[in-house]
Length: 177
Image (cartoon, rainbow, N blue to C red; front, side, top):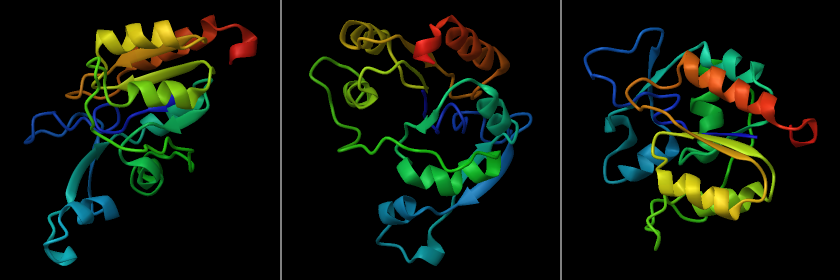
């Protein structure tokens, strides 16, 4: 499985605001969760959320030997606002019981739950907030191979990241693919 975060890997939200990254297209959206965050403002007056999405990412992700899964706070909204512009079909998603909570060991709030959700299956996780302690915890607590791939939120997924994902998957035993 390839567990995909959106903001950072697919939407390089920390790129210079005045310069869209090369190859990316600008999308302005108002997902329900965005409107909920601004519930004191009439929906027509809520400023849209700006996304930069690269249309080549969908085909490149589909070419990898993975089952793609959204691993993002967008949850199912990624199927409406992120997948279609980059050419991805509807994907399963990790449904978070809660988000952005603290962890007693300083792990990313996703780490424990996504490891439990993976249920012993091999996975690669791409995110812009992975720390060394997350990787170490997954290695110590997950019985199957796992790759954590930190993506720079200024650039999003790049050719070297796709190559690393392909190489890691090729190293898995056939039964783990």
